[in-house]
Image (cartoon, rainbow, N blue to C red; front, top):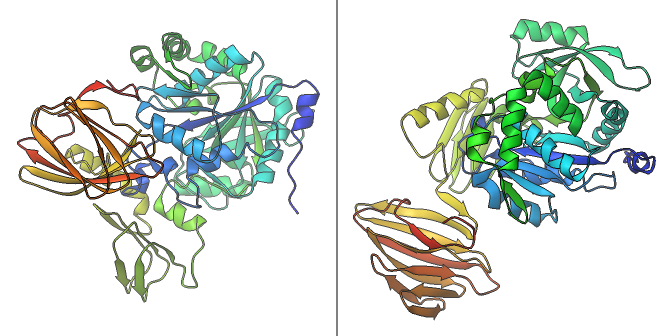
Amino acid sequence: MDTIPDLGRFHQQGSAQIHPVILSGGAGTRLWPLSRASYPKQLLKLVSDRTLLQETAMRGLVDVGFAAPVVVCNLEHRFLVADQLEEVGIKPQTLLLEPLARNTGPAIATAALWLLRQDPEALMLVQPSDHVIATLPPFHQAVMQGMAAARAGRLVTFGIKPSRPDTGYGYIQGGTPLEGNDGVLDVERFVEKPDRDTAQRFVDSGAFFWNSGIFLLGARAYLDELASINPAMLDACRTALESARGEADCHHLDAEAFGRAPALSIDHAVMEHTDHAAVVPVDMAWNDVGSWPALHGVATGDADGNVIQGDVVQDGVSNSYLRSEGRLLAAVGLDGITVVATDDAVLVAGADSAGAVSRIVQRLRRENRSEPLRHSTCHRPWGNYRTIDAGNRFQVKHISVKPGGKLSLQKHYHRAEHWVVVHGTAIVQCGEERRLLHENQSIYIPIGTEHRLENPGKLTLELIEVQSGGYLGEDDIVRLSDNYGRV
């Protein structure tokens, strides 16, 4: 039976506490159309009944001595991240909100700077929010093995024994064992994604490991190395945090200062240049689920090698990934195919080409299409809305407001709105009037009228909104006041 290693005994001996730092800034373009910029893969339930972000945060809940996490995420995802963590009972130390993406080097630097204010001896367990670790005891054991080296100033990463010559991963060449650090190796070099022949040589040698992107770092040690190797990044991150706007649960990093930080990964910014890198080899059923083939590989298939999710009917299909997020998906006579259907897009790809989905996303972006950016269901701090139909001078939406949720006080210059309550209770402010609406009741909001919608009940409020007018874009919203700081 697997047992959880007792990391707590290290703290009893006076060692630094481990602070999980969760990086939630990725876009997950290779998992389009399910993953999109406004709702990326780490916020999706891809391998369990929890999202990848929730699974990552839950790794520290067992009794292994971890502090509450520090989460670095995109400003746009602030409320989504907070809501998902609350769902699993996790209160983060803080959310560090990135005004723009600058890769993992600056994200980790900002977390280190913030943590040093709280704990001068802080150890950071840096984890991407979109990876899968299927067996936690080996992961915790590897963390335990790396603690002494990290306390001594080593920048510890975790290497995965490669099972195949995968060209989509970076590789780490392990060196000699570190004296007095059982299971920890010096790092000879980091290698970017190799070609297949090189990857095969790496696998055959037994000296190389996949780069998991997970790190155990002393906050001060990381910043010291950054000061030596990339001082411009450190200066930009320090200014961005010093000038941040702090709230009870988050810090809005200063956009101008953070934008000056070079957009480099931790590997390019520090790990490939430092003399203090170390690696702990670990077998923990790790996968970065970075593509549809990878997701197919971690899921349980049927006797024909198919992974099927959602409303799917198939006949004569083998070795395929079939997923529907709503509508019926029917597949006949296919082998080695990926099909993913959402309510506004369908992806069909050969198993060997599904990893190239990013090129489709790039093309759609060049054509200024909305599908790479957002789903037809758009999430907001108060709930969500989904566009049901749209045409010339009209648009129909299904709006859901969670209990206690309140939209901003706003007005529109180009459209009028009709609201029909279909479930729950609504309080509507329309001009100077406030009305309580129940199911099957409605209200009309004229063009230019100040209005607000809120849910005073304990059940989700659902209503149908019919917009009419000459322009129906989301930028025709003038917010006058807002509970979520969006004015």
